[in-house]
Image 1: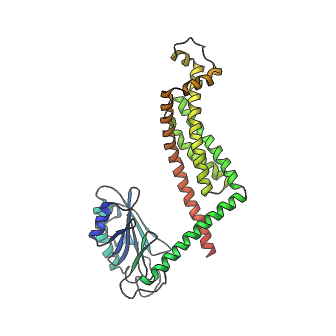
Image 2: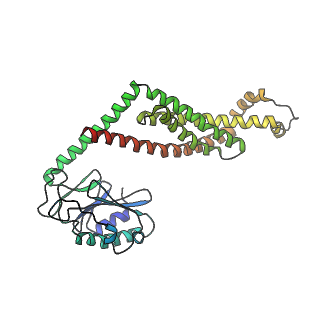
Image 3: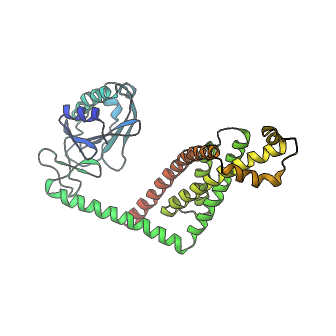
Length: 338
């Protein structure tokens, strides 16, 4: 996606804003810009610096008139396998001004170094005889002939379908060899272990909902530990286990706190009754009475929602790692088959 400010910058530079990207050709370079989470991102496609296709290593930072920090650049990465350069900017007030300065200063320096002299079509591999033509494919502006564009999009769609089929194949294989069932058991055990901090925090009087992070993370970790696989089944299992365990942990935490009050005699004191009035045998009865209280239900609902919010944090952090690992396996398998 792109912000209104990034779109305006693109318009000033003669670029196009469409399909979540600001892109075009600037100083002879195919360029793509978009907004990330706390960042602004830029992708450049370099050409060949000479008539031959031999690889030429150039230290881009030496071509810049200023240090990377002056442009608020968080990362400048040159792809080892493709002529792609990704630039990540810290998204703070004034970053667009720094991006404009980078484009106005860096691109002419890159062009002077010959990095946009020759381009080849990413589909057919032929050199462009005149100015480079581009198309937005896979979220990036790539050098491609107009007559090759349809074929490129077709190949990319075919690759997406192949990747989806590979993920399904791996999930089906996991079901056949039983690893999914082991993973579900692991998610349950991980969720149970993650629920322990919740109950402890509740009894100590802290914000027990923080324990939701451990429940969500425990469910994902437990699945991966027993299954050894991480795919769609992992996501579904972890989410279901987390939803159930957060609910049960909230109930258990409240019951454990009531048990503590009974053992210390505080429950009788709170209700203005003589010490020793309650014992642990009264726990179920007392909790049942609490469940009928609108005030208790309102507090329970608030704790539950907080728990789900924190659990989502634990889930998302680990599921992102799962997603990256799954993609890496699919890419490795695809490269091996190729």
